[in-house]
Image (cartoon, rainbow, N blue to C red):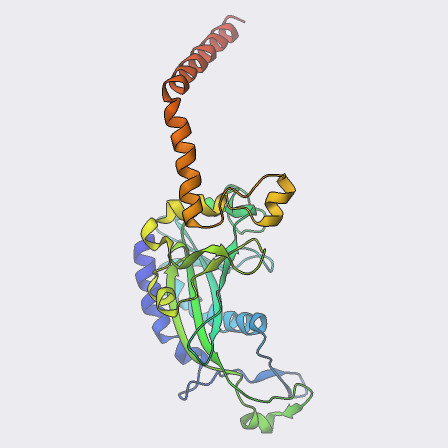
Length: 291
């Protein structure tokens, strides 16, 4: 499978994922955590907790998807490694990165931006294996499986412990799930995920998320990569004692144009320098051969 084929297959696959995580009424099937004494401790609406439990629920479905499509599924060796799931084609050996991201919508049908992973580290050094299962550059495609849900307005007392016989009394903390899959660059924004963090943010428009219509969707993955590989936060620029080269796509365009204009004025000089460097390299090679 190539990256276009796997995207289509994943988009079809996730249409069935509501059946995995929700009841017929749309409530989350997870009510809490149970111990060996069959005591149930209610789950919180903390987004990190919800995201991790959703991931655990979906991994068996992904394993089934991999088997159906002649793919090998690999999980990261440690927490906070990229990506959440690696799919490898048994035919071609191509690798595909899948990150599971979730966010909730409020009563006005608005969402908070998702964070789409770091724009430093392995994202910039694409041959590095630090904090990633395989080098970032070895993946043929980078996808996000997104989950949008609603939070239930329930007054669960986390101090309360329930018995297994009281399971039906525990209200689900989230409901109304919507699953989608898009290439990461198509849902990325031109701003960090939150504050001064070094994570790429997503569009916070639900329709744009679902349909892959973020600001880079038309600009393309090459511009997305270039923009985020050289983006600096305030703290990063201060550490280097330089001004930030750009802060959004408009200033990015101006920054790039300035560089192109300066280079264009000296194009002939640069070409001449290249010729001199090549000549110097040939002389060095002759000297080495003579030695």
